[in-house]
Length: 399
Image (cartoon, rainbow, N blue to C red; front, side):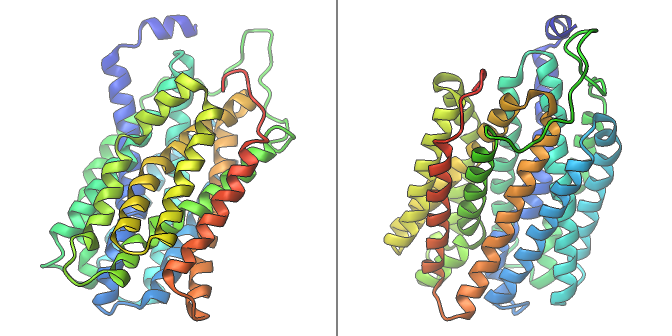
């Protein structure tokens, strides 16, 4: 069956499916989650809230993301994904539209929480559905390409924020993201709902589908711990890098907006690069290299304050964090091939928890008199923690 599916799958169909997944991730991650990063300095300047309030809003969004990913652990079956994916895409777009109507911190935090819940569910379900579709066609190695949508989303978000900076203020700054999200979400959901993925996938007629083995065992626990370190390590620059540029650089410096543009441009080729490296050297060795480069990027922001450190952090973190995601997801599925969507959801939930902790720790650090640049040291320690545990992950047959 899988051979016949592979033979009848055209390059055009593969492209359209990957493009639909990329567009969905562009909406929920690029125009939902990460557009907040370049928006944050403008919203602070507009007086909507201060830096501490901005960290609080980010924390609520990440809490929602965590809760969404945890719900996706429960709603991991293909029939559930088909039913819920378009619903939560609609919730995501609606909450973004509502952000254009309020400057109240509590309401903003609530809407960002709702937005995060929808993001967490969609970010798990869409790639998981596509991965299962690709596995049936022996094209699983292409799965990482769907994350190109995140990089494109960062670039689009940078352009929308910078391009509208002079003529929008406060809540109005959310309008570009909201308006662009509507047609993209509709098209992406419509295409993904047409995918031919049976609800259950036995190996043959005599082999039952196993779905009850534990997610946490001696093979997967080190991978989960490494992924936790990655989540906490990357989220600080991905939330506060433009704000750090604002603190360190003079008014009018090109890096005030340029740091996020560097992140975006570095992120776009990252899925292809890490997909390729994973195929050439194995997913697990590639993940070790990924952690080392990402750690160097966050460390640069701490030990090289100013333009050089900001550029290195933006380029190295931008080029690696999606590689961490796609390599870890593939390694996890190789360790537990019978429960791909469920394992993916559990890993995203853990990632979401550590991402929520990052802004909360930053707020506590700032409230206690610490500086934003020293807070990046939390990310350095987290990535070092994760790198250690990568070396305890066993090789699976396909890693």
